[in-house]
Length: 119
Image (cartoon, rainbow, N blue to C red):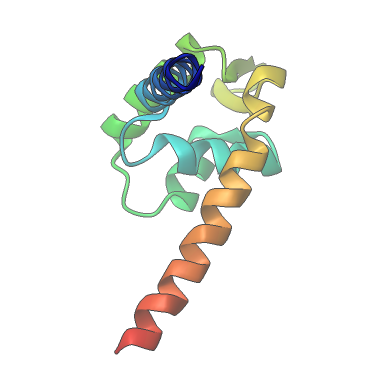
């Protein structure tokens, strides 16, 4: 009986690890979670995202936006302006990551406090 419970726990653990790997594959890199967090607040133009996400280059932002769009996490909307401009907004599917970005941000705040406390 104990062997069956152990095997069941291992399957659950490996399934969870596989799901974590799938998530990390989609959200990998330094910038994707930050971009998603920004777009959870409001739709933004390319230049606004570039300004908000400190340190990202234009080339990297373009690449990350394409990846996020390909994974259906954001929508790209061409605006009827002159000159033409583009707006990005979080998709309904991407909005499912809002709680995750909040938890990551809270953890980061607590971690920073913990590290400051150590010194």
